[in-house]
Image: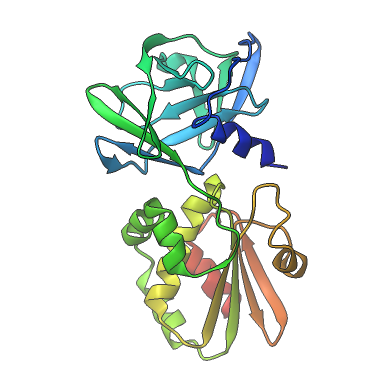
Length: 262
């Protein structure tokens, strides 16, 4: 699945289109784009999700626990509309609507300090599109790039027994973590991984993090060597892959890592 065009649509938030696509009336699928950072009331909102139509029409839907109802953002007209919750069928990283839903016009958004800003429910809302991290990056860069990752990492409480096992583990192990800053699942999986290996603090683990470009073609060398799975935690010993954890596991990820290493 390519995400190249999604980045182009994201850019329309800052360079609005002259023409707005016509709203269709059939069922329309929207997918979350985690490349957006959202602040509401001056604070980073990790409950916020920004969705884009899978047919690349220039609209966004914003949902958040901090606002009363979903919002439709028309990137062509630079206007924001309040929707009825019943008009948006949400399911984790996806929503469905009946065409482009109509809502109550609550005003325009403006560009301020690199963010698109507007007000709703008496609160300021600011949306930014973050540059994609590509290639090998250090945890400090990831956390600086995506402050919401730090909030999620600090909030995550790994199981003490698994951390104790990882602290004492004696075999040299390479850990390759493949992720994408535009990936919705990655923003859920990566912060716990960062917390787990930070708490383990075991020098027997060599952890490397690789960010994947939209479109999935870079970093070429890492993708050719480790594959195109993301998010993925790959455990390697003596040059041989033991196993990999792909996506969001059904059990705590630290337990899954321990089960692979036992």
